[in-house]
Length: 117
Image 1 (cartoon, one colour):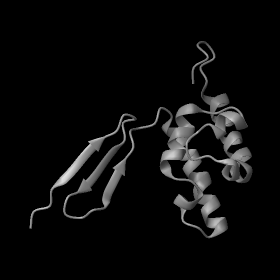
Image 2 (cartoon, helix red, strand yellow):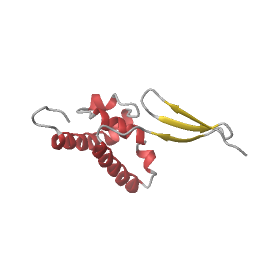
Image 3 (tube, rainbow, N blue to C red):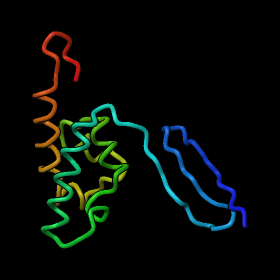
C-alpha cells in the first residue's frame, strides 16, 4: 500500500505533513526561532511546571506559543497577551514567570553597541 504525503508550508514558515490515506496531521515542524536559547529556557520552565502539576508539557504551553514568545520577546503583560496562545487565564497563571525569563534573556543577550538582541 502506498501512502502519499502532503507537505504544506504556511506563511509563517511552519511545515505541516499530512497523509491522504490517514486523515490526520502526521507532524508539524516549526522554523528555527530567532532566539533558540530562549526557546530552551522556556521549555525548561514548561517542563518544571508540567512536573509540578502532573500534566503533559503541551498542556502548559504548546511549542508554537513558546516559539512566538521567544521571537517577540514581550516586555510587559500587554505584549505577552498579544501573542497567539496566551489568553487571560494563561497570563494570570504564568505571565510573571514568562516575563522574568524573557527579561533575563534580553538583559544578558542584548548587544550594548547596537541594542539588538
